[in-house]
Length: 393
Image (tube, rainbow, N blue to C red; front, top):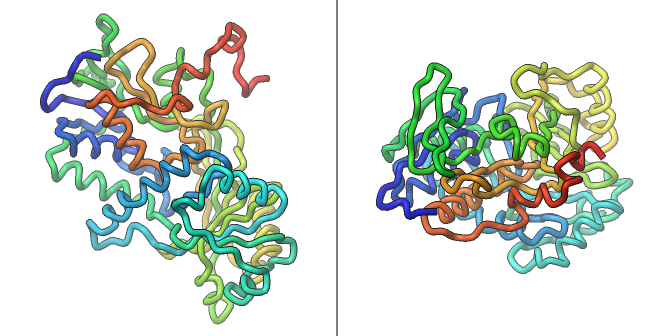
């Protein structure tokens, strides 16, 4: 890629957490940044809405993501300290392990999780004493990650957006498509009314819309799934106090369940990391059924007896954008030297976003390398791969 020169003009498409951190990292390095999004920062149809996300560093066997998460923490803490609105709550993460969870933690330890992350092994009696709201009758092991916690997701997006604008960043609320391509470079993105935004370089961090914007190179490989999240009312009295004292919890057996008390007062959150059904982020309904609520309530009754009869408050249908191998896309467009692609969060992206934005900014402005495991080229390696994806096999 040719040198961009001083104060390059860069358009970042997507005002979710990846686009916002990338835009901010570019701006801090001297770029003139224009952020574009169809609905606004941290909106509910993307992958960065709602009130909470987990920040943790335990990754089962993936050193890259462990290191990215560890490197991200100072940036999250700095963002938290920049506003009077609490953005990070250091509750810790409580890992409730059975056979599959034991393997997951073992893989994390095999690639050095404890080189930079403190983990506390707790006996079952000690865990019961500290968190009496938990039923641990089927748990084989309890591990506490004390420095992890909860990020206020939407508020983080809004604070980054405020910083971007305060430092002179521009914002266009519009739906755009790649425009004219000239000699291996993108010249502009075009809004629906024909308005064109030109720049020296472009970053597309479009969450569930990334595949549709690049249907040939990414469309066959990215799958958008619905991820149902449920909120229940906390009881009053001692039972509610015990539940309110819980850290973030990750219940790792045959299925990976997780949740927390919403610090914004939204109740007790519970969700599954299992990939849901495919969804069109624009047109498919985002509702849950009574059967869905009943199934989640059975989980609550087993693990948190005090919530067995808790009133159901609300649901949120989030989305994951999944790659075939579960890794992110962090790469330059293979056919355009001034276009950069960032997405396929696959459930990882929010907690890693400050570091991912830093990596992309350094690649664009300084020519730094990006992780090969996150390249676009890994998807298409043989003629057979061009004809069918892992999701269809």
